[in-house]
Image 1 (cartoon, rainbow, N blue to C red):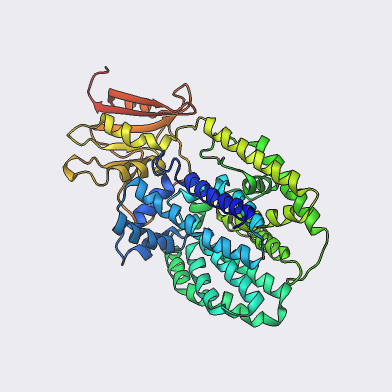
Image 2: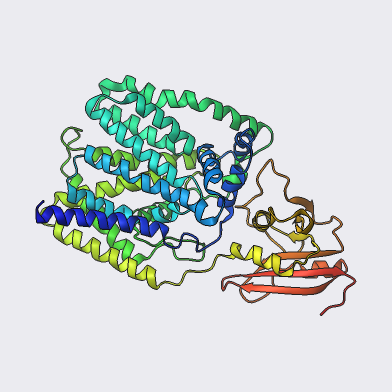
Length: 507
């Protein structure tokens, strides 16, 4: 083995270590958040009921929830165990990535450079740690793109591609955009094989009919997708720009709304390098798969973006979301790597600049103090004011209700307080991006004018430094007096709990 071979092998092994370490680092630093709770909640349903429960949610097919149910049965429900599943899936995704690089005839250094980009990508790290279907979507999409690219070259493997595409569309609806990009690639590069579109798209469509019927049945019962995604904005230039920053963002990701969109001093130079190298590479236009496969990568990137953008403006509700477009991240990294390595004069400067920027991003991430997430305070604050005698917990938004119910659901019945969600209570407001799962009555939802128990624990959020949004004055008007209270200050917001009782003097 030559010195160059040893260097390449060392670099590749080091990147695998970086890839895995970046996805394990901080894996249990925060509690499960709302969407992750829904994943676990769905997986806790029986095999007979999980299909119905997930269908009522409308916006995600059931494959990930089924896999999670099996994972929990074997590995349990600890936070580490739950988040290990998407991490494991993201590690498996290395296999189709390497196969796809081989299919595109990447040499080892080009493969290593592309691997560096995805190993350090902040959004890919973030979504490999969430108990959601995004790492599964990326992994299956990569298997699909590899099998499709191999079929284009050899004419073999269409049956395997059809099976993978069934799994793909059952993992996420955006899987259909990957299928659409394959159909576009087939029509552009090998029109003579147009009949193969029945296998790569038609067979998955037929297999998808049972799920489509389940969703339509759920919608006919009153479920409305506007409740799920009505808060999403139709994409504009800023959204496109933000997506492209995410494609090159190393290590950093926006965890909560108050954090900055991107670490611009790193992401903008990286994006300029990427777009410049790609523009130079594409300037020599040769639309032939046999001569220049990078145009196929371009299709894998642009078709999902274009499809999501157009449908977000055509449909009654926007479907735009950068996390849903996780299917384009690896093709873009490969397109970036391919373009950089085509320029003999600029390659050393570009490669060195990218490495320096990634190292800088890593140093920034190590020194950055991450903001605490407010939903992790719901459980400890509730337990702080609870006693051996369960007192009903009253909340005013579905976000709090779901988190608190989930945290207390396994407590003994005799000490587990009921969770009550009051709608339209004076002095409160609610983030409509969150809502309690349909088909579940674990949380009691009542109107604000309803008669409440004589003693309650009220959990609510307020602003940074004042109580401009507080339910306490309304409770006082109803004859409640403050018995005890606790506050957790998150800097950007405060989380409060008040123990209230009718006829009890103020402390």
